[in-house]
Image 1: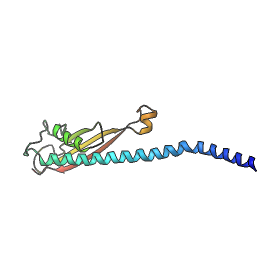
Image 2: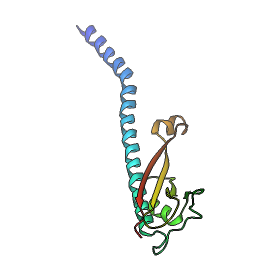
Image 3: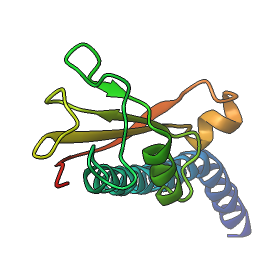
Image 4: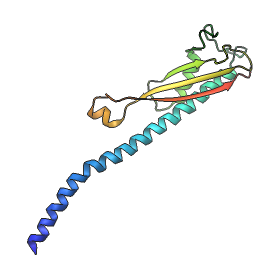
Length: 148
């Protein structure tokens, strides 16, 4: 009887050693997915705040949002004030790129403004095992109409 119990204990130890890495990988994958979804929601919120700032401070606002020649040829630009609003609202998301766009080609009342915020996301296994070789780009965007 003692020999059978000892053999079963060894079998359980081997099974545990085989299942543990797969179980840890699944748990870390779920946590990483939750972290990515959280950062993408934060980017969407920050882009919405940046768009709200841009519509309130349109070409007639105080201070006015300016974009170098937002005509049909150049319908997007980088604006320091909008970028500052987006980065202040994107708490916990590093390396954000913000693009301010005018789909209608003008910065006047009743014209649309879009703000796209992107940031790189490195999953934890890639960061620690592959030296950051795998990177996913997260995006949050918003489009509203200039009110002033």
